[in-house]
Image (cartoon, rainbow, N blue to C red):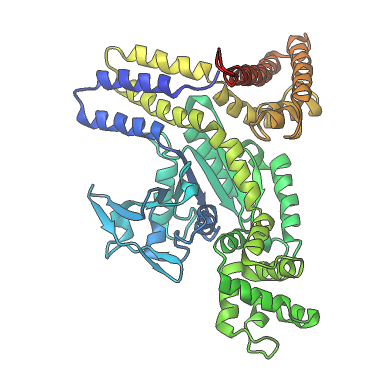
Length: 507
């Protein structure tokens, strides 16, 4: 059964009645209610220089997240949709200050107006970007920073001790897997999961182009490494997936200017030997030379915006037929890994947005009533328990971590199939069934019936231990959910056909 936000809202209403005489608590509950109505909250975290702000810009499609080492990068910054651009700085003393919206060379100038980063609780940026309609993005200071205050600010926000995590899910950027990365993701899972023990993180190899020393095939090498991490590494139980992306290339592609395309086209038109010598290294590319008419500042800008890998790739794509700036931008986005990451976020987080938001709110309410119980608290706790028991989506997220690491009396093939059916490779019906998106209704129905029979048989086998039998029941429930949704769609389609016919007595 899917999570109902209406049921969660009822729990909030009941709790608000219990604590109606405490204005501070009512304000907290009102904040939880707003969280239910808001889009999914997605935090972007990682160690220093992992490319968090660069990736944010690539997702949004504009250069509004600062990527330098200024004061503003030490503050937690929320990016949400707004009809017109606005920036509000919220200070630790509870006051709020509107900041001017200024852009320089296409980049948003985000300054603290004379305030210290230590004085800022968070910055709220409203921006008219379609990418922000369904997701609130939260930029956090680097973890494991040499500046202890920066790390502490991120850790306190992402791993709070006395409240649910403010983010519903997390995109964790890393360059290689270090102990600090594993420790953080383990702590986030334990903090965010609460009693539901869910996993709601994706790991991103954010500078994938550097893995192959900037070669054109660097992303292929990065994809192989990401797949190995996902299957065999410590990240397996801590993240739903590992996705490689060339963040700088993605940002450059999403914000490509016509003047940059013209410069890249000129490089593509150079003689091959001349071009390859020029692009041999970053230092050589920006040296004084007669090999190209592009000025040093223009070449420096290309290097800063796309990296050496991106410049090489762009030149190759122009030679391969990307003859306009829009065509080049589209191909660069595809090559950067951005499309794969965006699809992952849709399949794993946005598709589960209701359950993820509900879980965070219920965790906060449960903590409140347990720490400060009042007459009637048992009824609230009972309501929370009923929602969690009925929320199959949260059970799926918990099982996705377990099935990858816990000893299960199943064959490797069945373990992989269980992970897929539970939504480990995407939540659409074809993804769960292991079929292409173009599969016909008959093919889906046939596959659904076959899976139901197989997993019911496994669950009833005397060879299955208690946990394996439970896992099989949950897989069966996921398959039954697919069948139920297919039946509902067929019934709705039938109603549409009937309703579209001529009215009685019509010609």
